[in-house]
Image (cartoon, rainbow, N blue to C red):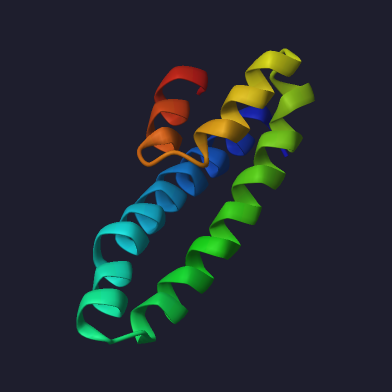
Length: 94
């Protein structure tokens, strides 16, 4: 797979992971805890978990291909834990 294809796939995973994190925090969690409606957390949480794993896996795959420093990889992985972080990564590192 070529570099541009890898970057494009990671870009989309990053965007989708960021969206799923925000939906989980801003929609599904309030529905669960404020309105006692836990089903959205189950589905959005599962999607977010899968996308998070794909994000981390993609970051490690691009680490050597993009010749990122260990510091950059560490920041990219840490930004996956912060709301809006994956959007920043997508803009700055890709």
